[in-house]
Length: 294
Image (cartoon, rainbow, N blue to C red; front, side, top):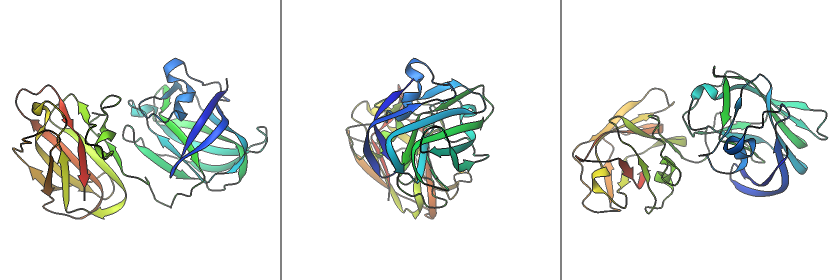
């Protein structure tokens, strides 16, 4: 089955690839709303899902050979056991003879909807790019939301090249009200999700930054969904977090209102996390329009 791609994401943007196709040489195309073309629809709320078998493969065929230097995954919405753990990347000029150009081993499971970038170790001019997945994190299934190749380099050790917002507590939100709306610089959009104490928001930056303040913007409606109490933490590696701030009994008097808060103990961190512990009484969910660290 051949699926035409109208565009593909580059690390620094999108470039047209009219006539490109994506297939699964191993026959793991997926079905319906979870088919392989979902890896190129530029929508991280959709995904490619398939039963897992060693050698499960994803292949990109371009209209003409292209020198590509990196690729990225966007992780899917659930079940970290389905995340890829080991894989090889291959290139081919004719779709018949493939050369290994990169390999990844023992890569950990990631936060839901996180984006990760990988360098191609031995790039070349190829018309076919194939990824063979050799292992996952223990599930009988396999999934990814997005796969994209790019002609841009990825610096050694770089995790993301743009800020990425996720929810470690799993409160991603639904399409058009998902967690990523908090960093789209549009206060008319919002992140909405059912609330429970411990709901968390996390920002991953391209590199460590010493932020001394942050801003929250209330959403468009229902004041009872506004956050009231929360703690702020920072981390250099995304694993060990240090408490750097706390707020209690915060009130947003109006809709789409921006409030600024100082960070009590600033430091150089690449990860910033806010854990929300309570809302106004009688809430029927949680929402926030924008979150910005400065």
